[in-house]
Length: 354
Image (cartoon, one colour):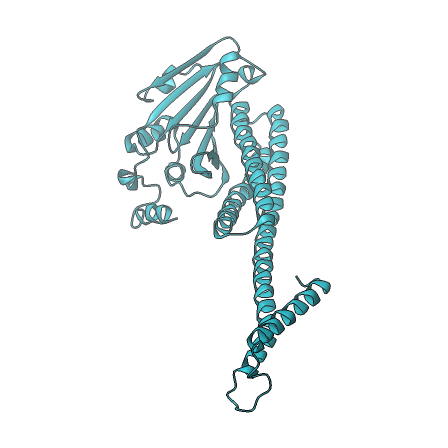
């Protein structure tokens, strides 16, 4: 959160669409990958510049241009001039705290969403902003850093599996959205497993580590809900958009992604309720544990009340008290105390208090 606020503060005083606040951002080295394909042709290359991308692009082919890293001001300016992209769009691309949304322009469509992955070492969800520009036979994706969830999609392109090599840029954009949404299910499955494990652990006992895990899980669910809820609206707007860039055949597939998004939202709500239930179980477990401790302490105190009474009676220093000069008086008093304690323990057990 501090990072987002810090990046936002760099824009103060700048003109709308200005990218100058990029100068101090550090998202790693830029990497540009281009995949060009059609039903008969496939080429995958890593390029150093996209200045001549227009002349290199074949009209009957689809080009997927993927850019990893957002810290190159000259690169963003080149993209703006080559593809006639509005400065405010590129400002949203590099300003990585954007809300998931869809925008339509004259010759391109713009979608921004959150791409999430699971870090097994930290055992937490990591997210980055994914921006997608859909042009005529060209799709441009912007990622914060190298590494993504699109390797299965790239394999399908290389192997010419399915209809992706026979379709246009709108179908490629659908495949990107579908990959992101399908990966949400993978993350939700891991969270579900964590919920079940915590639920079993809380039955045996609660500790502060489990409480911290529950709170971390609730924060993850809130973050996922914040990312996925607007995606439903964005995909719905994309389906209803009357644009030549999206064919009717692709709209059917986009409706399937919309249904998956609804399913993700329902699952998130269910897991949020389960996480809240875990917190209730934790508080109940702590309360039960405290009650057990108090019960034991109360029983011990109750047993010692009559023993203290007997000890107090025989501790008084009156001269004429019965049994004071008996040789077995001490042992008789101890025996009486043990007898009283035994009777009380038997009574408690009969009442099933212990």
